[in-house]
Image 1 (cartoon, one colour):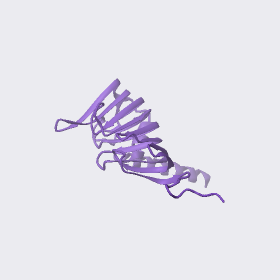
Image 2 (spheres, helix red, strand yellow; image 1 turned 135 degrees about the vertical axis):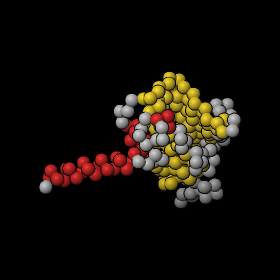
Image 3 (cartoon, one colour; image 1 turned 90 degrees about the vertical axis):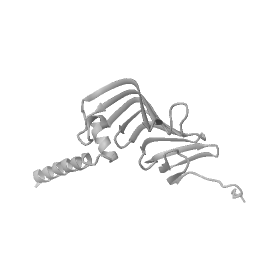
Amino acid sequence: MSVNWHIGIAIARVVCLLLLLGCSNSDEALNAVAASDVPPVQQIENGRFQYSEKGEVMHVLTASTLRRVEDGTAEKSEDLVEVSNGFELFLGGDEQDYEAHIQAQTGWLDEKNLRLVAKDQVVLRNVSGDVLETEYLVWAEDSDRVWTNRPVMITSKDGILYGEGLESDARFENYRILHPSGEIVLEGMEMNTP
């Protein structure tokens, strides 16, 4: 009975891995590929990728190390770029004129779908100066949004907000903390002590 149970668990793990790799838009699929030991198709040091539409710069990705990897789920090997040792993604423009800016230590960009998974010391800034800090963030161009299910800290001119999970537009102008935490004092509603 014990041997059959272990074989069943092993088969279930293989099936789950195959399901994850079968969904090219899934964050889990990107993470599974990045965790594997797939050799790079191409590696670029101190690189800069510019993404444009009809001659207008839409996004710029700069990184210390960019590696194109073949994952078996993307249409072609050039569709997945692993970025490491620090990177920046400028949204809605280039380095001088942009709508939002993401920095992190590591990540994976699905170039075909323009979906980025950023990990480790993630910072998202908007043009108003609001700053989001977290350890994991996903950006998707097709839905024009960013999100995370991890702890967040948002610093703005109004103060600091904490919570777990966040959904926002890609420019980080309209956001919602899924599970806020901490103490919030509303103007005119200060607590009076007896």
